[in-house]
Amino acid sequence: MAVLHNKHLRRRVMLRPVHTFGRHPASSRTVLQEADVSKLHAVVRWNGALWEICDQSRNGTYVSGDKLQPGQWRVLQMGDVIRFAASQQAQWTVMDLDAPCVCLFAVDEPSQIYVLGPDENLLPSANHPEVNLYRNEDQWLLDRMERIDALSDGDCVRISGRMWEFVQGETLDATQEVSPPDGLLDAQLLQFDFRLSQNEEHASLDVRVGQQVISLGERIHHYTLATLARQRLRDARQGVDSPSQGWIALDNLARMLGVDPPYINIQMFRARQQISRALPPVRQPASLFERRRGEIRFGDHPFRIMKGVTEEGRFPYALQ
Image (cartoon, rainbow, N blue to C red; front, side, top):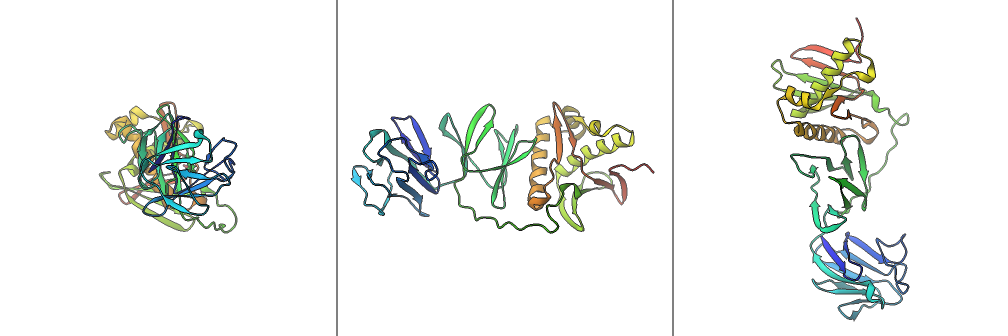
């Protein structure tokens, strides 16, 4: 990742693969306030091997004292001082020239960075996660446990009381949007089929989407989901009203599964990540599971639980 530092403004900027500087917010990734700066003043880009800069202005762009010719690309070097027009306030020093990457950097201290991999990023730590960030096809997603949000470049994320800016340091191909047949499909049409071995050492999950069956294989988190589903089924059979069905205290669930409570969060993040990647956008479940203070339950979705070769139960529960 490349970083420019403005000593006068006490400001750091992390460069995107194509990064624009200027006075107009609509055309500039980094907005400069000086009156002699053009609406679109200069462009910095990653050419696949090096960072380079090109002047687009009326009043000039200078690199270490050299004025750039309009339309001329110049390779940046560590320690270069970039000045946009004449103002000393619009003077930036090249602090880093690493390749662009996807990351979070602390708003109050940009030197603190989380570099993000595409598969799973449990933060602030893998042992005690509050959020999970991952890429699903051409979209980065933020799983806050309560919900999943799409991330765009420049969005801010609060983790452990601290604000972090999301940097989309890669070029993703635009996803072609295809309208589903018969309009937008209802996520409630999903059905979850849990299959447990007789000794319950193996748990697999199939998700039914209409006539299609998507097999998600065996995962530890499928047994965690099945345990939550069982509680909802048990409450339904006992006549508990729907808003109160299925709630389990996190500490109790951890004891039932023989794990530490933070591990439940990890399992839930991984379950939702796997399911969101397996399903098309129009079929994403609104809430795979629900949380309230200290408690969790399986969401309001149809499901079946099969143990061995027999059906243990299904939800919604129908009295026989």
